[in-house]
Image (cartoon, rainbow, N blue to C red; front, top):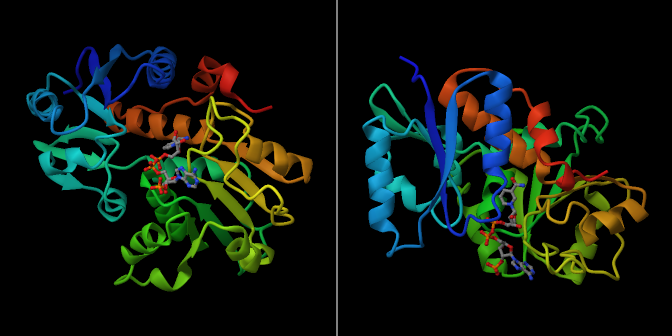
Amino acid sequence: MKPEKYSLGLIGYPLEHSLSPRLHYAALAAMNVQGEYRLYTVPPFPGGAVALEYLIRDLRQDNIHGLNVTIPHKQNVIRFLDKFNPAASMIGAVNTIYLQAGYLQGENTDAPGFLADLAQVVDKNSVSGQRREAIVLGAGGSARAVVYALLEDGWQVIVAARRLTQAKELINRYRSTDLSDRLSATKLGKDELEKVASRIDLVVNTTPVGMWPHIDESPWPREMPLPSGAVVYDLIYNPPNTALLQAAQTDGLVVRNGLGMLIEQAALALERWTDVPVPRQPMWEAVPEFVNE
Ligand code: NAP
């Protein structure tokens, strides 16, 4: 039975700049669904372990109907959950939890959220046929979701990280799958990028480089041109137009910031919790200052 009023929220630390409440309240109002979306500030482990356990207990008892999870708990919550969808299992991180038929289900909506938003700027048929090759800058948590999404969508993927070992660790997760032959790792450096740049159709920044307040920084070496004709997607949305996206625009490339991914992952989570279609437009209208125009 559906609750009269949904009790939803976000677990993370720190949370004071989170846009999630604005997005979820805008959507709930447009859906005409009663609900609250609270911020649960849970310190990193080990300090936050007890608070996290209490929140999980509230989910099991149906006092809370759905939770999003962000840094630093996307992996910490896994030990408390019963079931995972394939994306969460392969990525090894959960951002959406809810009780389903008595089991605590963990999902990752970052991956499908990224893909749904990428589709706004990448027309499958227009990107050079068979050879759709992407380079993912960074190899942390969000890179794992992006790499999974791109592989699922049929891309060849190069993971470029400043620590080659981290990029290799990421691609090794796929070693025993049939996706591994579409994956490679390289160092995030000028010499290495020069070797692959001519093949690249899509650049995705998953590093925090360029985030406010360090807005003049770019993960792509300054003296190096971006791959010609590529789409450039930056997961950062604050500032809405990062130095990387500005450079890409100057080169005439198609760009997209991470606001659409944030909105899509939120909308997908809300759809899981309520089983009601979520309109995206009110969510975009709730955060106009982060739209890159
Ligand atoms: P993370 O797990 O800490 O990973 C960050 C990655 O960037 C790591 O590979 C890290 O390498 C690398 N990196 C950090 N500083 C760097 C530098 N100066 N030069 C080169 N590489 C550097 O973080 P995350 O969770 O993936 O988040 C990364 C960014 O994505 C953040 O800006 C976050 O806000 C954004 N994000 C956006 C969305 C969205 O919905 N739009 C969703 C998730 C994340 P080291 O390990 O060597 O530091």
